[in-house]
Image (cartoon, rainbow, N blue to C red; front, side, top):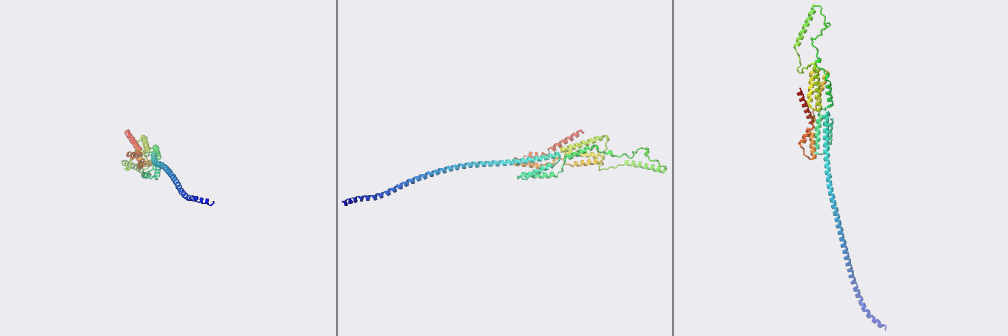
Length: 378
C-alpha cells in the first residue's frame, strides 16, 4: 500500500518537472523584453531630456548672442560717440590754437604800435626795440612758415632800428628852449665895432705939447700929413673875404624885430620837432642859424654855443618814415591771413604799410599850410 501511492505520485511529478523548465525558459525572455523596453523608455526619456537641454542651451546661447549683439551695438554707438567727441575736441583744440596764435599776433602788433608811438612821441626807441625783441622770442617756437617769415622780417627791422641815431625828444626840446632863452643876450655885429680912427676926443689936456725947435715941429707936421695920406688911401681900399657872407648891420631899433624873428623861427622848429615834420624842422633851424651867423657876433662864446647846438639839432633825423617797420607789418598781415584762411587783400596790406606814415603826412600837411600862411602874410 505504501508502494502504490509512491508510484502514483511519481507520474504526477513528471509533468510538473517538464513544465518548470519551460516556464524557466519563458521567464528570461520576458525579462529581456522588459529590460529592453525599459531601456528604450529610459533612452527615449534621456533623448528627450537631452533634446530639451539642447534647445534650452540653444535658447540661452541665442539670448546671450542677442545680449552680445546689443552690447556690441551699444559699444559701437559709444565708439561712434567717442570718435565724434574726439573729432570735436580736436577741432576745438585746433580752433583754440588758431585763436591763441591770432591773439599772439594781435599782441605783437599792439606792442609794436605802442613802441612806435612812444618813439614818435618821445624819440626813445628803447620800448620799440624791446617790443621787437619780445616778438622774436615769442615766434621762435612757432612751427609755421608765416610765423618764421614774420620773425625774420622783425629781425631785419630791428637791425635797421638799431642803426638809426637815437633821438631824445625831451633833450632836443630843452636845447631849443635854451637857445630861445639866450636870444636876448646875443651880441650883434655892430656891438663890437670900434670907432673910426679919425674919431679923436678933442680934449686939450690930452694934446701933446708943441716942440720947442723948428726941426721937431717940421717932423711932427710931416708925420701928420703922412697919417692923413695913409687914412685917405685906406678909405679908398677895401679888403673883404669872399668865402664868408658879409656881416649884417641893422639899426638899433630893429634889434627887437630880429630877436622876435629868431624866437618865432625856433618856436616853429620846436613845434615841428614835436609834430615830426622834418621839412619844417630843418628849414626853420637852418634859417635861424643863418640869421645868427649873419647878424650876431660869431666871436662871442654864447653865439658859438648856440650855433653848435643848432648844428647838432639839425643833424637829428626826426622823420617818422625813418622807422616805418613796413616789412614787419606786411609779414603780420600774411601770418594772420595764413592762420584765418582768408586771402590777403591788397587794401589791408597798403593800410598796414601806410599806418606809420599817416601822422607824419598830417604833420607835413600842417607844415605846408603854415608855410603858405606865412608867405601870404609876408
